[in-house]
Length: 118
Image: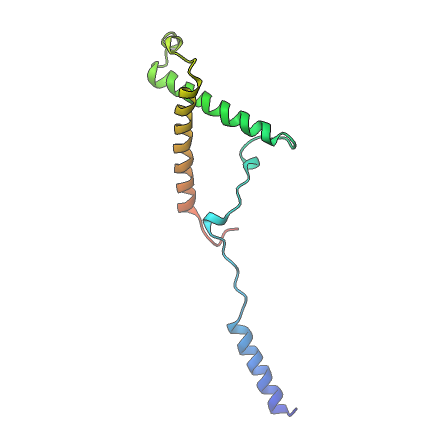
C-alpha cells in the first residue's frame, strides 16, 4: 500500500467512527424494573406469605382508618357502632385509597423522569 492509500484509510476510518458512535441506550419509564423489596420489609424466603399478608392487612387497616376519620368523625364511640365484620367492604375502601395514591405517585414519578438518570 502506498502512503496516500494509508492516509485515505485513516481519514475514512476516523470519519466513519465519528458517525457510527455507539449511542447510550435510553431506558423508557415503562421499562424500569420494579422491586417491592425497596418499599416493603420482606425477609428472604418469606416473599409469598408476606405479599399476601401485606396485600390483605395494609388495605384493611387503611380502609378502617378512613372509616374512622370520615364516617365516624374520629369518635371511637361512633366507630364501634360501625359494622366492621364486613371485611371485604372495608378492604375495598382501603384498596381504592391505596390505588389512587399509587396512581398519583406513578404519575408524579413519570412527570419527573429524566432519561439521562440511571
